[in-house]
Image (cartoon, rainbow over all chains, first blue to last red; front, side, top):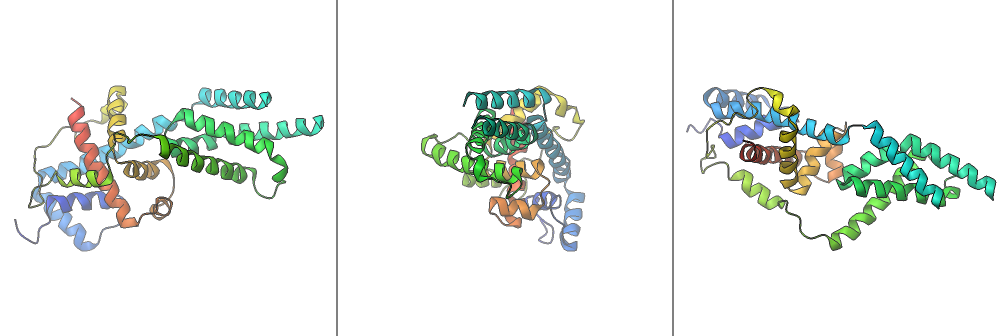
Length: 84
Length: 193
């Protein structure tokens, strides 16, 4: 492996880093070069985006403002307050 | 006395309608448990009702209620850390070791084969079975990593705000997200057939 080309480990780091903060020009170039030679890391970029969507979906399922649940919760709270 | 009580009850009722959802979301985010979150919000409103006198409109009701809730969350953690057994999720060190383990000594993929998950259609996301697997994989993450990744998607906060909340540096933050994703990838590939 040429020393000037990033490892896969470093490349995956850059792939994920770039979704959160901007890469330097050098980093972007290294990323491009490695991906052009490595199918696995190119695929990783897609998978990483997929995981983003999966997590997003997982979270919004958990926190969906479920109107019925919300109303039930409010009723319950008010009932408890009435008791006190 | 009765009139004051009625007025107080009305105020609290309005607050329940206006703010209980937001309080619940926050409590749920902090505790990951619907039941616990409901209890904490319940306790918050009870406490608010009992010390309504001390409120007197000095701040926004929402702020005041959130401060009560936060104290209850802190108490909850203090109590639960004494009684909960070690959960099945990984420690951060184990997480780091695992994620490093996907790469060989030259730091390239040990297994260069490409798993079809995530590279094809996105219909999986609508599949409830897949979401169950996703749940397991999220639960397997080290707790702080799960929090970091959750706060990224749950709030509109920018990276540096999240880092302040979680008490980590920005570079630490994306490292954590990155490693968490590696673990999630592995977990999904293993558990989803």
